Length: 140
Image (cartoon, rainbow, N blue to C red; front, side, top):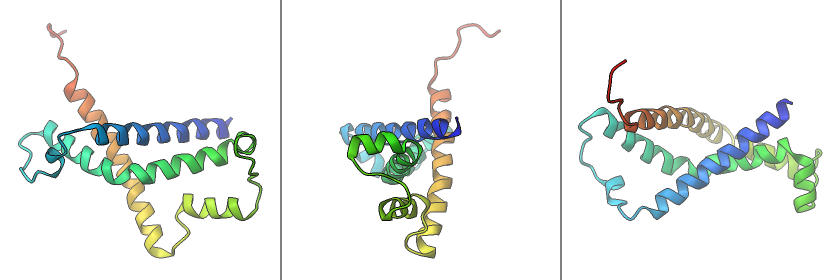
């Protein structure tokens, strides 16, 4: 059961990274992303932080999600691609990329920082949704 839950989480991570890439590439106003104008209020700060962090995290999230899905659903990947994941060099290489153990200390530190940034994306995304949600007309 845990493998299925991890696999679903990995697929959600891939979908989030693809939707972020789609939204960023489809945005014709990328100058807002590059502007150096300071944010004046909390919603604008959260949005800018989310956009800037998200652009850098798209590839990491896609790799983590895709490799996590491969580990969670090895039979499906074997039927789809024809490659088995059972201790061979492909599986070990994929694990090294997924976990950040390939490349020494620099890669490990980069993976740890990106893991923290993933949490930051979740927090700023929820903040953006909460601040953008319509306010009730009557206080209860």
